[in-house]
Image (cartoon, each protein chain N blue to C red):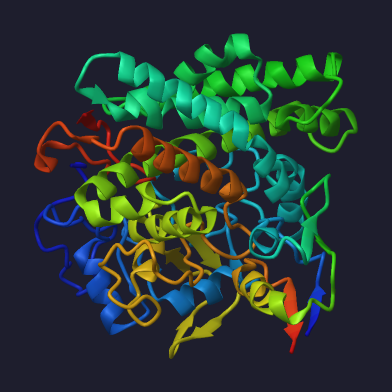
Length: 416
Length: 64
């Protein structure tokens, strides 16, 4: 458990509850019960965060989609009133170069379009044989190794890391080192310093890679770093900005998918009837729908997407004033019973109303098609190849990532 | 049915191609939407509606 979370009632004397809120230890897959309780009363309400400020927490599905699409809602974390994640993010706000995550409107569109090329639907489709091969090789190695195995180390972490290396254009001989650096900051007992060191090391590595690709452009510049290198050459961005965008892609595309694999496998092992749906089909549409439902049910991006209002916004009977912070929470929106009946049921045949697991609006996950392809391939291949897969420890002993940007498990001991 | 896309709004999510690959494509260089068929046949109408509903940038509109 994170030190910032307690089992005590989190209401402050003023009646405004503290945020983030803890999950129930009895329902590890569910959003925090207090967040769901807030949403059953109102689609948005005030919460108190670490710095004592009281931004709006938006929990209703419709309101989440509306505010994500509203140009009066900014991601610019330099604006006063922006509800920062923590002190560290506030302290570094003027040191970090602007990126796709922190820019609005035209500036954002410019960054976003620089990154989109390797993630188009058809480009990702063409990558499926590579993802399949990497997945099969890691399952082969796991089967050949000792039991029990840690599914995170054997499959969930290396597969997305190798796929993103390929997509970024990291040379094969650097892939191991790259994976190590990308993973070190994610370890359970990683200190803030480890995380910062890991990110700085990656940033440096990517800056060198951008420069190498500027000097020797590959014949078929299909990878993301070559793309960024071309733009540096054309004077559109600096090497530093290119490295920042590359690091962002790597971190966003690696940890999130790894967590979805680990937590998704655990959720399926705990719901054997649903696991059977995925295992016993070869129908791509059924596999795709199953992954959408897992994305909805698990909604791993926790603790809210941070925004600030730049004008007054009237919504659901409230007025968000210009300069007030906005926290958009994905999990309660994906568990909004007005849109998803019986949201607490994992039902892989559920009809595919668009969920907001990847966010919504113009900042919606740029790597979502890649994530979908990886999840479809990994879940299906794993349960098809190891139908007897089971947990090797009681679920009560599985360590959950309550303290991370993305929810998941630190380890998943499995046997077969 | 008539499908209209706004390339300026497009966020390159690829959701339209995922739902309706016969109606939409993405530009090679930046993933921006390309309309392949502005008058899709009846059997593709549902896919077109799904594409519009899942577009995060509200860049697709449909006139029934």
